Picture 1 (cartoon, rainbow over the protein chains, first blue to last red):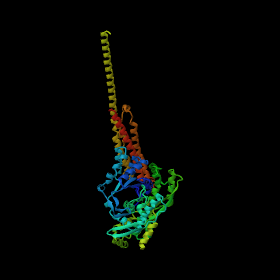
Picture 2 (picture 1 turned 180 degrees about the vertical axis):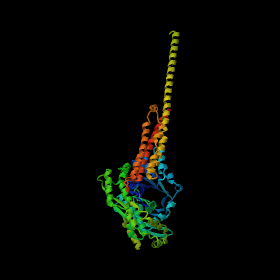
Picture 3 (picture 1 turned 60 degrees about the vertical axis):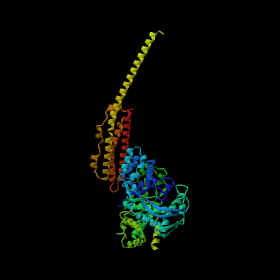
Picture 4 (picture 1 turned 90 degrees about the vertical axis):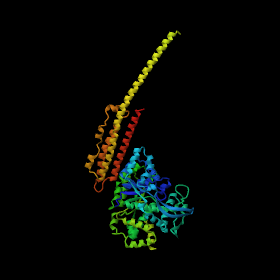
Length: 439
Length: 178
């Protein structure tokens, strides 16, 4: 059952998440971690590679945490680690600069990743250099015991990536996914109003598809250097796969998500789609998956930490005073929006941030909590009606993709009432799903 | 110069050099003996002080287990109070005598005593945090995770202090062979 004490927080920066941080050359979004620490008792961190984990520990130390602090945070369970022991990569062939052939999307595991507790073999040895002596390092390693959740490729199966691939081959969904990435690049590079993306998908048969965009994605400016993003056309696909993996994980853990842009938009769309498909009604989906925006007088912790203007000891000090936020999230029965705004002001003042600029707090998900639970139908329509709907899709060879949606939707609003911190607007996905239903 | 005078001078000078050398050698030997005795006494004292480390580490491990047990609800506060390690009684047998403390370059006693007191304080802090995780009822003022973090942080800092004490004693021990 969701108790809103824990959130999965993906910290690696890239084109799919924390793009603004990536553009500044930082490999990990410690600002996002700082914010999540304020709103959640437990933070399940996720990064993609041993190098990123090493950089994360290095940044935490540079931003004021001692080795003893980090060990204590893991030992107490404030920090936990969520590790996908596989990589999800599109299999591509560069035919020409203008043309890439995408042959599929795969979960790939090497020999070490297949072994039990591979996290300790791959991620832990490189961080030894950040600890003063062996005893200190050994204590850190022992604190990690029981604090790492390791997921193998077989655990997650193919459904999440099949679903992402299906979306990628749907011109409207593909355009929606690519639009989020283009918007983010235009915003960060200050390129003005982003163009509207239109995607055309042609089935060439034998499992091959020709996909074209009205805006050549491979000519988009790279954020990490003066070049273009050569494999940009694969980004919507890998972002969609990452979004599905995060949702799969939070569904299994019955926890929340704390996300940056642009992946938050894709997660929101998928959550909404899962509710729509499972309950067979757009109205019901809108009742379950809601948005909440509140203007709060509270420092922009993510930005300030990423600019090194606030260090982690200060973040932990704010966290100590912010128990009210966490209780607000945890008490599903009475989520008073005004109380949340007042708590922010109170905590900001008591932490020495009086007169800070107003910022917008954005979250979405099963915000209604208990009210939504009570209003849920006794059974989702995974029975007859949805079966018929699914049958069509199965006939199109997308059984795994639709299974994923039903899998997510069957728990949504019941045992799993996720709240996602991040940017998402439901209008576009709602419009698209309505158009698809009417087609 | 008369040859018998020069022989006499040579004998006297030779005698003086020989007596001086013997005197100096005796001085060096005596200083070396004193130095060795002091180093022996130092090593005895350091060995005794180094014997504090194991009970301290055991006490910290046991304290952490008890604190987690209390906060997670697997032991009652009564069980916690009685099972919490009593470091003072364990350290008593390794206490340094006043003359042992005097031979050491840096007296480790205040540092050791500080660690012992901090372990004792952890017991009461843990009970305090445990109370905060329970009250006010239905809206406790502290989450269990935060209480665990506060206690873990104290334990980690104490472990670092034990490490530092061990290192300081070990370095001083090695210096006694220089």
